[in-house]
Amino acid sequence: MEKINLQVTPNDANIRLDKFVLENTSDITRARITNLIHDGKILVDGKVVKAGEKLKAGQSVCVEIPEDKTLNLAPQKVDFEILYEDDDLLVINKPQGLVVHPSASCDEATLVNGLLFQVKNLSSINGVVRPGIVHRLDKNTSGVMLVAKTDLAHISLSRQIETKTCKRKYFALLEGVVKFDEKDIETNIARNPNDRKKMAVVPKGKGKVAITHMEVRKRFAHYTFCEFSLRTGRTHQIRVHAKYIGHPVVGDDVYGKKDTKFGLSGQLLHSHNIEFVHPRTGQTLSFECPIPDYFQEVLEKI
Image (cartoon, rainbow, N blue to C red):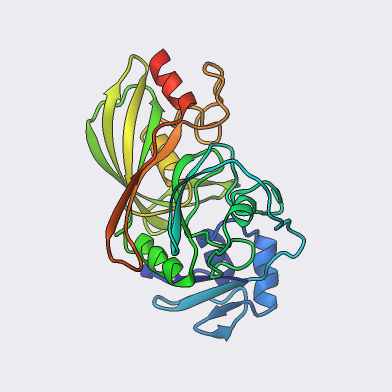
């Protein structure tokens, strides 16, 4: 069973419980949220309340999501590179196109299936569907990821991500020529009210604050190669912010336009560096993951 703990901020005050959970979680439909509330799987300050309950600032909301027993959790040989491994954790290079964990829409050949095939022990905190998964990358985002082998490591790494002491950097190729050299992009992000599969920038007071630091690395005639650093970790954050400034990620057919020039399978967004403190030794570790060949080929063509 997966547990999600949410805190009601002043901006969230007076919002209905079902709407609050909908806006602050991913991969959960409105209908399922209603059923979870009815079944007592969503609690406010440890108590069962109705879906229409108006929330107050400072309250805690706990969402318990039962495992889907129909998902395929069989070990499978899946292509991904292990950059580092010890008794506590792994650092991996996730290729573009690989889904991180099983879901109703993709229940085989995921990273989790591959981890079960290659790794003997994985943390259990995220339940049987997401063993070892501390954080995620979108299906078509490539690059470095952390995987926990023990619950102790999982708790420590999750806390570092939550407190921003785990530093993550990404490379992306953007459409158009960005005029500024460096910028902090700060907005509020929430589910797109017109399309639940997308996120969107929303007015202050709604959604969650999202902060991305962006630096231009190289300008081309019609594109800009940039580095992004996450200050927060919202769903699709970099892709949404790239669209917000008018320069969507090349190949992003969700927030930009479908690629017809380079033959891409997805967006040119790559997690190239992660830095964190080892949960057991206290040593600061940093890992680089080179840009994949298809990304490099586009840079050489333009």
